[in-house]
Image (cartoon, rainbow, N blue to C red; front, side, top):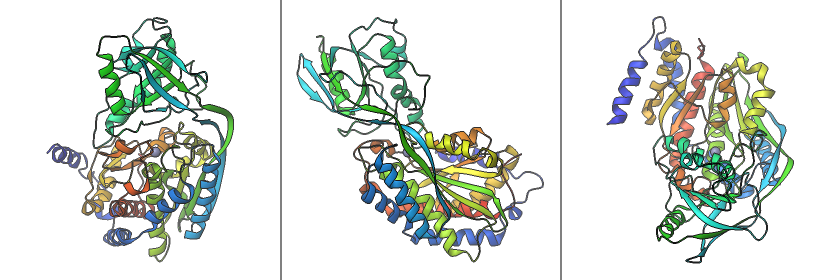
Length: 467
Ligand SMILES: [Zn+2]
């Protein structure tokens, strides 16, 4: 019901503006072509084949590792084989962080092991670990409110639950805990930190993820920190309720290397009339190290490439504008590839018509969000009408465009989000359970269909999304 009302409101927002008739923005012929491309995409297996290949032949591909480098080579080969033009790697460097031993155990009063995973960017404990009394906080804010130095020798535990939502909005709130706890714990004088995983699953996998961006040089000192699986966080909470001091030993031995190679992989379908105008569609090539990065973000790699491939293979001639596919490197450790792209292409960003990234799993798209000039909302409405038969309704004008669109968006590039159903996404996110079997080929194909229709329309139309 709430969606219905939201849809109604958005329809009001999308009332045609004077001077822009919908049939002039998307002509009946263009609409027909978009529908045909979508129908073809629903039967096309390129996207699934790519994510199957990437997750099988490369597997986990943490930023800066040799595996991420192999993934770039894999990408160049695949993109050339598929027939894309201007296939290239734009290299950059990134610090390389790799996990080592990760162990947590209650040492008293009920000795037992706990399931944890080190948070990306964490500093190490001594090899024998650190031991201290555990102090629990219901939220990051509660930890941040304690007096500096008042938790000397303790291990802190931030036991904040993430809310499950369809649009992923619970993540934005919960992720602050992952980013900030280790720094707040250090200020308080603690020797280690644990958080309840940023995730929504009840399985016994802990969810990893980056603390502050690995390239952020402004961060202060921090303590070794890890995430507990949800059942282990529950277990700790119960153990703490027994009114006896609870001691815990934490051993984490990650290592960091100052510089390692990473890079973005780029491929294009050059536009036939205005090749300097770019429709940017992205996904990220790196993944966390524990799963095989199927849902995050092998699926996105498959979706954007599959959509571009359907357009390339089923039109007599290329669309007017250039379609640029970008596989961003080093997304997970702090959007390093996104920044490198925005810097390397700063002079052509004014020619980027729109940008979008698929990085929210492989479930169906249900909503079309934009962040474009108000005056151009009728253009979004004209496109949105073509997406309706795919089960995609109108959304808001506050789209992020996806994580790797951050810097181009901030530089003024209009963005859209073809928003996937994220209800289950954070059950798998950043765990060893992010594997190929979680991808439903039919749902993936619906994504490809939506991208194919959207990308074709924007690349073929004469309108843009700026004032
Ligand atoms: Zn991702």
